[in-house]
Length: 188
Image 1 (spheres, rainbow, N blue to C red):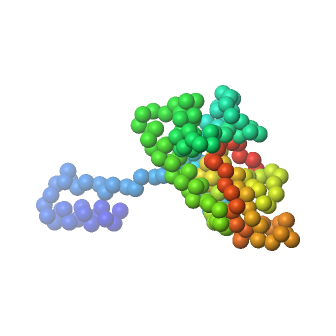
Image 2 (spheres, rainbow, N blue to C red):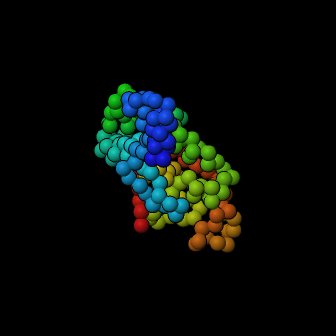
Image 3 (cartoon, helix red, strand yellow):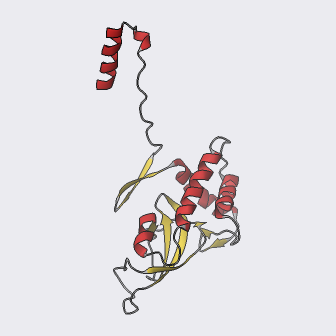
């Protein structure tokens, strides 16, 4: 408001008319309709994430490769291309949205793929959310923080073999990471 008044006052001194004063552009609000609470604060759940969350049950109903209710993809396939094509077949996107959603998916997959053997559990917890349900500390299913249905299974090498319990040790190291896949989020 102060900036606009300053511009108007400067314009009046210079002798310009009302039509010469242009409003300042405002920042575009985020395209969030849904927020998820996390220990670090709220995370925006974007339109592409909602699209993937809607896609997972549709793919499950349609049929294909499943494992315990999760939609899995060919091991040699490019996960971005495979997930995008499968979801676009059941939840088609317009030509203008498709590249944006595909880029969003690619960025999330790259974040997941940044988790490699040797990564600590602490680093994993910065990117992913642990799914609920029964699990053992050495093998846990995670979902991406921005998309419940984008999942990965991670096996850990525990720092101490004498402790196969709780709380989970943030220094445990990743032993292996599955290919990303789509599934239903499980919470306790």
